[in-house]
Image (cartoon, rainbow, N blue to C red; front, side):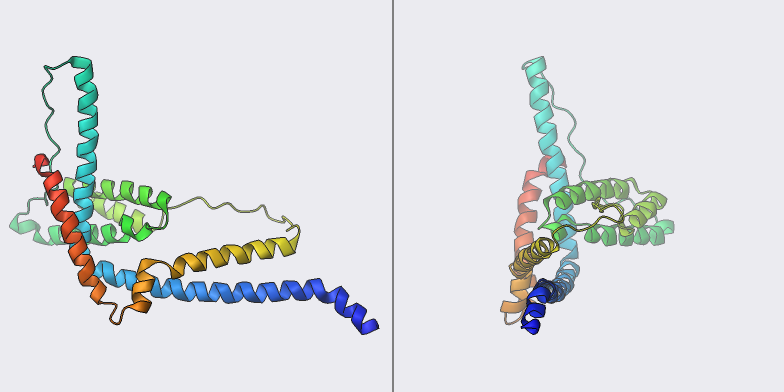
Length: 241
C-alpha cells in the first residue's frame, strides 16, 4: 500500500522526466536534420555561386527600377503630361581594373562573392523577416562593391561574418525567473520542437537529399531554374543599361 502511494506521489516527476527525454530526442533529431540540410544547401550554393549572385544583383536592379517607375508616376501626376523621364538606374558593372590593381580586384571579388553567398536571401526561405533583412544587406553589399573601395568592403565583409548584419533580438527571461506550471512548459516546448521538426523534414532541400537517388542531380535542376529567372530579369532590367 505504501509503495503504491509512493508511486502516485512520484508520478508528476516521472511524467516530467519522460517529457524531458522526449524533448531531448526531438532536439537531437532536429539538430541532425538541420546539419545535413545545411551542409547540402552549402554545397548547392557553392555549385551555383555565379547564378545566385547574378540573380540577386538583377533582382535588386529590378526592385530599384520598380521604385523609380512608382516615383515617376507620382511625379507625372504632380507635373502633368510634359514630364521628362529621369536618368535610368545604372547596371551593376565590375569595377575597372588596371594592370597594377589586379590583385586588389581579385581580393574585392573574393570578399564580395563570399559575403553575397553568406547572406543571400535564398538561405532564409523559411524566415520572412530574415529574407527582408538579407535583401537590404545584399543591396548595400552591391553598392559597396560597385564603389570599388577595398577597405570599406573589408569592413562590411567582417560585419557580415560577425553575425551582426543579420542579428535578431532574442527575448531573454530575467535572471531568477521561476517557471510556473512546469508540465505545461515542457509540453509546449515539445510541441514547438515537433513543429520545427515537421518543417525541417518538409523543407524541399531535405526531401531532395533523402528522396532523390542522386541528390546532386538537383544542382542541374536549379541551374535551369536560375537560368530562366536570370533571362527574365535581364529582359526586365534592360532599360537600366
